[in-house]
Each structure stands twice: as C-alpha cells, then as structure tokens.
Length: 279
Image (spheres, rainbow, N blue to C red):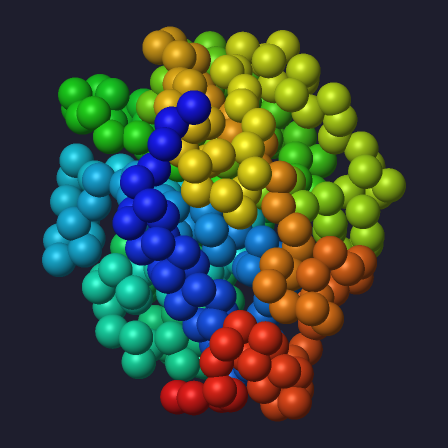
C-alpha cells in the first residue's frame, strides 16, 4: 500500500474542498449544469492535478505533458475548477461558465479552453480519443500518460468496449481509465437501467489490468495507480458517491442535473463551510 505523507494529503484535501465549492458556485451562477455528477469526481480531479500529472500550466500545449480526457464531459465544472486553481486561466472565468461565447462551455472544448486535451460530451468517445493520443505519444517517444475519466453509465456504450479492445491490442500501458463508479445515471441506478457487472472481470477479459479504489480517498487512488503493469492498460474502478458533500444530492436518484435555486446554493455552500454565493 502506497502511503502519502500527511502534509500532501492535507494539500489534496484543501484542493478538493476548493473544487467542490467552486462547482456549486459555478452551477449556481449558471442556473444549469450537472452538479451531482461533477461532485462525485472532485477528489479524482484534485489527486490528478495536484499530485499525479506532469503538466506545465504556464505552457498548456507542452508536447510531452500528461493528458486528461474527461469522457464524461458533463462533469466539466470539476475539471474547470482544477484547471483554474492550477493556473491555466484566471478564476474569474469560472463565473462565466455556460455563458454564450465564454471560455468555459457546458462540455469541454479543446479549441476554447487552455488545459483541455479533448473535446467531449458525446458519451463513449473518450477512451477511443485517449487511445489515439497514447499511440501518438508512443510514436514520438514521449513518456507521458493519458488519463481517461469515464462514467459508469457511459460503459453501456458499445464504443467503450471497442476502444477497450484497442487499448489492450496495442499494449497501451500509457492509458489509465478511471471509472467514476457512482452507480447513478439520468434514469436511475446503473445496475437497474443496464447492468455493467461483473465489471472487473469484463475488463480483465479484455486484457486490462484492473484495480479497485475508493474514489474519495487519495491513498486508495494512489495505491491503485501504483499497480500498473508493463504492456497493459490500467483501469481504476473508483467507487464514488453521486453528489458527494451536499446532503440534498448525496447518493440520491434522479439528481444528476438538478437546477439550483439561490437557497439551495446557499444551503450547499454552508454545508461545505462557505458563507454563501460569494463572487
């Protein structure tokens, strides 16, 4: 088991707390967005952007950087907050989320936002894009990795499994797929809508190395990443909670795209130890 020093864990916890509050504020100001499914990946984003990734915020297009593909593009508020807090653009841009012509749209756009490595939103496409990026990096002799974050409901898409075959066939050990396993999609429980289990066995049968992790626990995520195997892509099945941190969303069904009123924003921020809609 990998151990993260306590001071590093504290930094990650503070980053996650900042992202979580930003997500609530952004969606509160925009009056639209996928709040619950953004909250479930907050710790994953903090872990990646504050501990794992080899990136240069001052040079977003540095060719040898690690890449992040948010295949579940609707969770982009968490990604945008991480990018802003790491210095890819100013935090003022967060409050223009989803505005016409703004830098930060409702789904990631590589042509508009510094730090975005792939446009996404059409579910099931991100792993295929990640494969292409990983192959290109290999051909150029770069050592970077591609981290693809998918939803679990997204794994009902056939394109994911075609891409999973490709990752294995080409031995793309520079691909890491992190599955946000919150067991919730628009219609309800993933397992009730269309079961994806036995997920670990399925991925293993496709030639992947598979590790389980607590998606809200930094040492657990770090330990899963340490179990990479040469010649195999790695899948981290990160068990998460939809709406993590906000009582009226956490673990609840039918809440992926709840519309926030001012009162709900203030309630959520009070729960997250903030003082209200502070811009």
